[in-house]
Image (cartoon, rainbow, N blue to C red; front, side):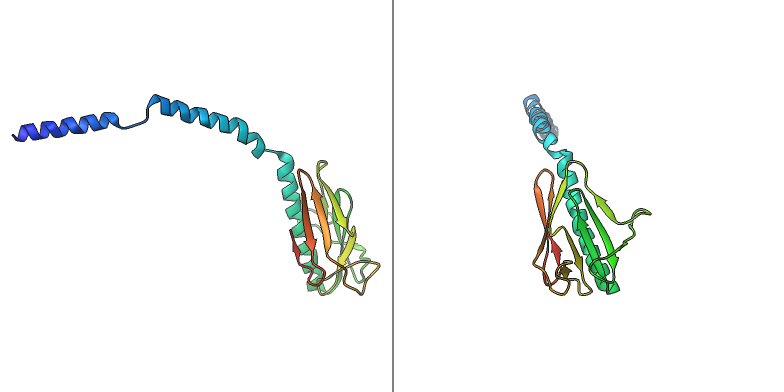
Length: 171
């Protein structure tokens, strides 16, 4: 009787072991779906302009925050000047700023150049942060200006805003 019980247990276990795993159809379907996703999704994920645009937008935002922090810490004006493809930071005792800020990553001046596929559009194109961290322009050195907006255009336009009263930089 004992022998019979163990034989039926083995038979049940053996049959269950044969039923485990994936069928060939399931494996083929998974490979087909993975192939379709690779063909459709991967090219969208590796658009270089999209990554460059987002990265440059983050760098501009960080640079403007850095400029504001320098202005507050040193009680001087820090000017940000935008062209179509670059941002440069300078420092000085007045809002005209003349001395370039040294770059943190190289031996040159603090200049952020955009790749050829990306451009800047700032309103106004040149402004400064005063000792309180508020944005000012050369034409209105003693009055706070409205919010400063910077557009970084690549795959899409990302807008960076510098708030008028606080100088807070955000997207």
